[in-house]
Structure formats: structure tokens, C-alpha cells
Image (cartoon, rainbow, N blue to C red):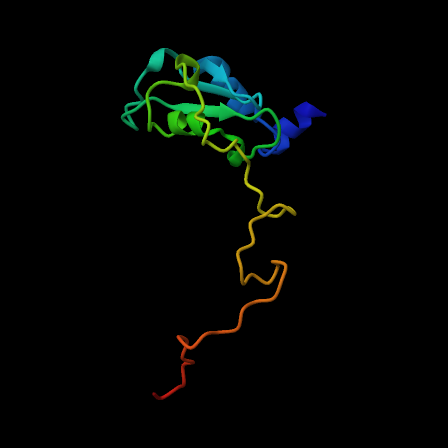
Length: 135
């Protein structure tokens, strides 16, 4: 069943083409706490078309970009050159734990005034003037 998903879908992990490209050109850099695997072009070769090395992630579960932790996100987007596996980073006490994107779930952020937020929307204040045509 997994092979069928790899042939016909891209959102359930890697496709067969990505698997072949990773096997042929990829170098495993490391894994994160969610089991996602991070790769770069073998040997750190610079892609002549891009001007930098290619980096990619293969997700452990469904393809969900919000499941990329902050350190790996920075490495994937060339914000930093050192992958988190090569650093001895210690989390600061004031840092919040990683949370994935909660949009579409019961824990989604709903600001005050949202139709889906609990409570009553505050009435419009005096700083709002309705537009009237021709004025």
C-alpha cells in the first residue's frame, strides 16, 4: 500500500522520484525529534543553476512544513550553514516549546473580534466612519 501512495501522492512522504534522487545524490545530515530526515547534495556540491547547495527534508509522516523545527528550518533555508546536529545548542529557559501550525484545529489562534472566538465582539468605537458613495 505504501508503494501505491508513493506513486500517486506527494503528501504521504516521499515519491519514488524523490527516493531515487535522494539515493543517488543525497547525503544524510541528520534527523529531528519528529523523525524527519534532512539531506543535502552529496559532498556539499554547489548547484551551478542555483549558486548554493541543495538541501531537502523527507518527512516521517504526512508532508507538513510546520513540522520543521526552528534550527532545521534555518539550515534548510540557508540562514545558517551549520546543521543542528553539528552544534551543541542548549535551549534557553524563556524559549517556548515547538508547536506545529494549529490552523484548522480546535487549538487554532482566534484573535479578539474573530467570529469563531468565544465571547462577544466589542462594538465599533468612534474612530470608524462608514464610507458613503459620492462623498
